[in-house]
Image (cartoon, rainbow, N blue to C red; front, side, top):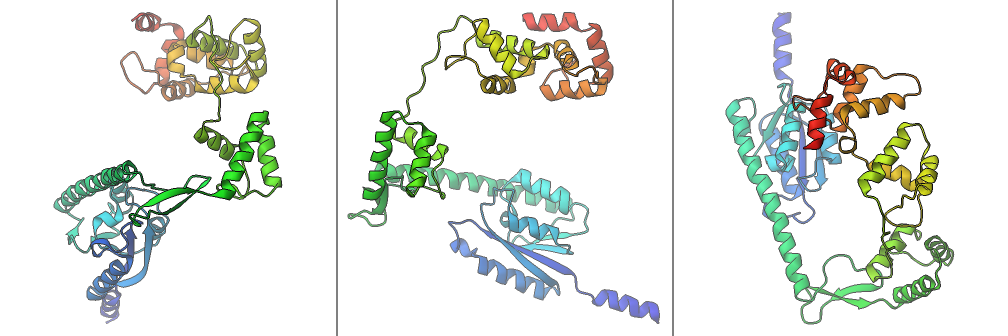
Length: 372
């Protein structure tokens, strides 16, 4: 009798369900897929199937975005069933959907249900059908993006404005067609622009202009105060920013980077490298001389696989290790991360290959590769 009561109790316990609804910002009520319509369909489905609906989560974001707060919260809640109206509400990206399925639904502990498609994912046929649906969903998302671009191009081609009004202007409805907008000057913001232009022509620094505008409590285009990036973007848009001319140099970029890399391997600091380069006659692309900051930036951009052989790169790492020689596995990981390819054409290195590399076993091979 006890076993029978336990069995009846388990059978009478309803399965728990979590719902998820989503719309893009421009389709709140399109195609009957508004948030309210999706919620009502999920509630009705759960009631008809005897599911205990824990909560319905929502997002107002594109289905092509993987990072959605509502979806993340919904997936964290433990439930027996995960319910959506359509699979494209869950994702419009094939890669994102596959990753989500592998992580949250493949084990079978949680069932994924799409009400309209009426497809179950506990069979190979169901998974194949979902893949086909997602292909069309992704195609529709890309087609929607193309239509939006064409529409924007058409609006601007007819002399109307689309998007946020730039600083110095207001967007107002066009007289001949109120559906579209045109730009008109904002007197207060135009006065600010003229004041900034006068200061730029005087030769004031950007930081000084930002501080002066903030002190005068002049309202910026965005945020609470004027910043260097806001002022720089304004100068670029208005054509006030004068680019520094490029230097005439008697060396190539590759020669410069190789010299910088060599100096760094010898243990010189960024400041010391800048001093040595200036003494040896090396010139930056723009500007009068090398500084600690641009040496650091340029070294960070160097692609090791272009300026070193694998052996030279390993020896460089060893020389920079301050007496603590890196292990063969560590060097193997470093070679793989830097993009070096093994003599067999593989992207992953093994410790034994690194050992042979440092012995010079592969020198002839990489010498030929360099010559080619």
